[in-house]
Length: 378
Image (tube, rainbow, N blue to C red):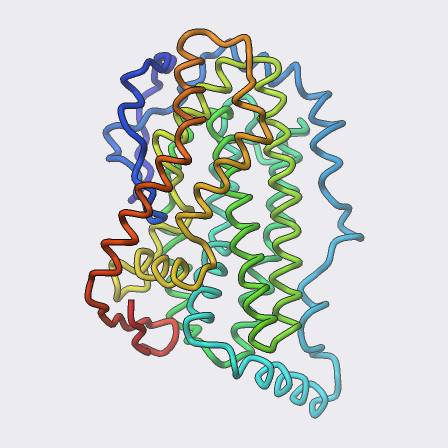
């Protein structure tokens, strides 16, 4: 699905109760609504002044969550040293392969999916740079918002680089098919439903950064249990980055709830009503048109990222942002507040029903090109 360029839209209408008729499906693989429902530039122009007024605050409270380059870990720290004498380098690679031999094909499939998601970073930076009032349309904007986006992207860039190299050296995956998937994903683009609106964008990234923290944390746990402490350290280190980035985006939303509570609450309600579109939902290897759905099924079964995690993240953010106690809202904001604060229990009930239906379904096999067309039962 390509992002469609639409004419400049008028300010988004305020949310009323009919915007929240029922809780969204809790499927992790939720796809975005049709493009005809999309809007661009939905933030009222006068709101840009809010972000300009917060530049000093962002410099003091957001930028310090970045790490200086000289203090950041780099992929080489975790990989065989190619400057070693040839025999020593080969032995280091052999040791890496020995550590990974007990890890399952299912594990490698999920790890590839996580890596592919990280590798689509050019798309994510492009989207964040296009947000009204906080963007980086010239590519070198000195505002703290633009500085954050570029530096955040630089920190995130290491994640895909490290996982990709480790997977390549493991010999457990088909790099040609993985690289085709990455190529297709970046070329496809993504429309997460931000509407060039930073209120929506920062709510989404708060949720998504926590989701990646959870996912990488779980792959770290499984790697440790499977006998590869180095891979466990890699995934845990990436998870720590994601946690720090989550803290930054959540801090921004906290500030917006303080200075503009109704608009921020409406953005949270709108984001959750739309559902969180996963960044890699358009992944395609050229063979399986339902690749993301099949990969997500394996990830859920292994406990790497589940519908329960979706509800847990929502409850965590509700607590962090103290949404249940938020005051000073208009009637529209209060309706959005009631919707969001009551959503997690409904998601859990829907998931219980979905799990029950899934248990009654007959398992079927799916071949995955990433692991040399081996068949996994879903």
